[in-house]
Each structure stands twice: as structure tokens, then as C-alpha cells.
Amino acid sequence: MSKRIVRPQIDATPIVQMLAPESLDDPPALGRDPFEALAGPDPLIERLDALERRSPQIGLPAPPLRARTPRPIETPRTPRIPRRSRQASVPTLAEVELPPPSGVVDRLLDEDSRRVLAALTHLVDGESALDPFGFSPATTKSAFPLVHALYRGYFRVKSEGHEHLPKEGGAILACNHAGLLPFDAAMSIVDVALNTDPPRLARAVVDRWAGALPFVNILYSRLGQIIGTRENFAELLDEGQLVLVFPEGMNGVRKTITQRYRLQTFRVGFIEQALRAGVPIVPMAVVGSDDQTPILYDVKPLAKWLGLPVAPITPTFPLFGPLGLLPYPVSYRIVYGEPLDFSERFGPEGAQDARLVRYLANQVRGQVRRLIDRHR
Image (cartoon, rainbow, N blue to C red; front, side, top):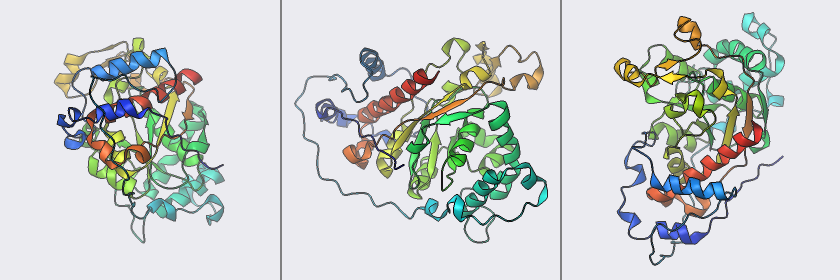
């Protein structure tokens, strides 16, 4: 089934008002790291949240921020020409030449999983063992039996909406985040790979602090994940790859039990990158991760002293030591929504307007929230 792009019907007047001369005095949205946490609550988000509670329709125009004369949006734009897509070289499952099983790993995997892993080896060019971002097909194959067992047997993942995943070309998957340890990211990556043909590797954006952890940073890289920098993000999209982002950042991970399934403020870097690269955004929801490790309390002074993003107290941690951090065997449900393409309407120059970027991020946040509410 061909994917359908949803182009939100947004009234142009409020957006034009946001593009009026007063808003051009705001600092450029890309003048900072797109994954940098926001400082304090954004009054625009609070107004938009109140508006969305009155109407569930995506694309409802935001109220004018102040009275002023609208300025026409400049048209037409020069279409952006993306670079060669690396993803196009991955064969379909039917085209994969699968050798006979050899070794313990092959015998632990079913034929479908072996075909997916064999197809993903084509992401690496020539005789190299790694792709330019450090992805290792050999390491991924070695880790896949354990991750696949968690996917099938422990979290018992069910998913739907795979028709919204693009078969080729760059795109951003924007997902909610919870659960203390990133099992939601691992299960999402496996689900995307197993439910696309040709198989697609979702490159999850990792918070910068994880890049400083010995061994863990290398493992993430070998499994195809990236540290969240503008350069990495832009290059992956230019090469036509899928990028998985969690716009809540660490605020989603350290949610306490009283905040279960309540989306935190979305960072805006993924909107900026989508506009600049001209790619769609696929809203995505993981239901179940909020229940896997309920945090009773976050000891923030201790976390700050240890240099960690969170110092949790859970029903099992620190009572049972490191084992107390293991997730409960909850059932996961992963849902993909219809893609949102803002780039055709606002173009790359839209990434320079901080208010527009914030407004669009809230639109995606609203879609993710509706997916969660619909499938809980």
C-alpha cells in the first residue's frame, strides 16, 4: 500500500502573523543545538495546549499573539534536491540470497530475521566492516537474538500502522519516551526492521551524556545509533535514512508514576531538521513503556551530584541493587500515525522562525498524544 502524506490544513493568517517583522527579531532557531533542553515553560505551548483541549482537530490555527498587519509569505520556493539515498541500495527480502545457517547465531534466528539482517548488511559499502556512522552488521547480528527474544517473548510487542513507514527516502519518526532504560527505543528499531520491505534501519538519536559512557557509546554506534548533533542528523536525512527521535528527551525518561503517559514538552530540533531536509515526520507512540519501571521519586540533588540525568527510587531499586532497574514484563503496543509533511508549505526557511518551529512541534506532539490515548 502506498504511503499517504497528510498535509495539515493550517490557516495561513496566524502563521503569517508569526512571520511578521516583530517575530524576525527572535534569535534563529538553528543558532543553538537542536537537542538542547528548553529553559522554563513556553507560554505559546501553554496556549496551544489549552486550545487543543477544546478541539481535537490537528491543524487548528493558533490564536494571534498580537494584533499586526499580515505580511505575505514569499513564493515560490526552489525545491531542495537531496543527495543520493543510501537506503535505495538495500534489497527487498525476496532478493536476498540467504546462505545455509552457520554458527550458533544463525540457528537461534528464524528465516525472516536472517533475511532482514542480510539485507541490512548492504548499508555498508564495499569491504568495510562499518558504515560512516559506525554501524556494524556483524555486531547487530550477534545482538539480535537477545533483542528479538525481548521483542517476541518478554515485551510481546504488537504493532500497527506499518503502511505509514516510507519504503525509501529520509523521514523522521517522532516518538514518546519513558521507562528509565531505553527498551522502547530498542523495540521500536526491531519493529521497524521486521515490518518494512526493503528492511529499514531506524537510527535512534542518543542523548549526548550517553556518548561519554565507556563501552555503551561504542555499542550504540555499532548497533546503528547516533549522538544527537545537527551534523549527524542532517547527514542521515540527506542519505535518505530513517531517524528515530524522542522529542521529550530525558524529561520523558525520568517521569514519575504520577506523570504516566503525560507527554512532556517537545524539543524542536527535529522540526528544524525536517524543514531543512524536506522530509516528512511520522508520529509514533509506544504504549507500555511508561509501566515498565515506575519511578516513585527522582532524587534530583543526588542525580546532579553523580552527574546522571536521573536518580530514581522505584519499587525494586535500590532495594535489589542493579537488578532493580530491570523492566517489568509489560506488553508493548507500537503505533505509527500518518506522516506529516510541513516542508512543502513552509520550506527550509521556515526553520529560521522560532515561533513557527515551536508551533509545528506542538502539532506533532498533539498527534503522538492522540495515538497514545487511542491505544492505551
